Image (cartoon, rainbow, N blue to C red; front, top):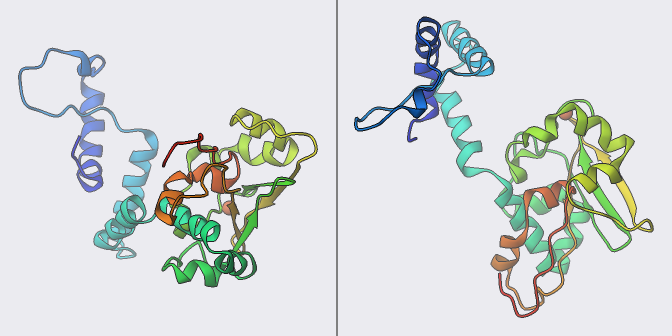
Length: 237
Ligand code: FE
């Protein structure tokens, strides 16, 4: 599947029409021996997006090229790797960590990250005594410049409501069982303030350099629903 988002949107409406006229069920299973790409019926959401985009373009409110550039940025250039670099620097450099915890915007900008949906960042540190996790109870506020676009579950109603009602239960479902004496703090991101968790540096990473540390950091650990796992003795990243 090499088609781009633009190809997909261009063919989406056509395919929907074709689907109405013929039964495409099982189309993916038929014998091959010829060169063509199969078009499955786009989802309601894809069609709605296509309609909305066409309307906005038609009315001159947005340019297709600008939209493509924006999507491309968040699909390919911005993502959790940025946040991982921030975390790794904080683990590696105590002065940077101090700055990150006191003036996150400045510290994150030092690594070249910032902009839309990341203007007012607060970084909260996980310790042996405190575990932080992040939610947006109202919608899906999320620090795009350091984590990219939010995962589907982050935007789901169950995560948004249950994170505040039963955070330990939610963490358990992510595979994280916290001892009773560890305090859980839940931070509610908003349009004004977005939170990033600084996970605990795992054991067994004392000899790793910054790049190797960054490779260990996962998106979910920076939302606070998991930890960064310890590195087995003798293992390297
Ligand atoms: Fe939100």
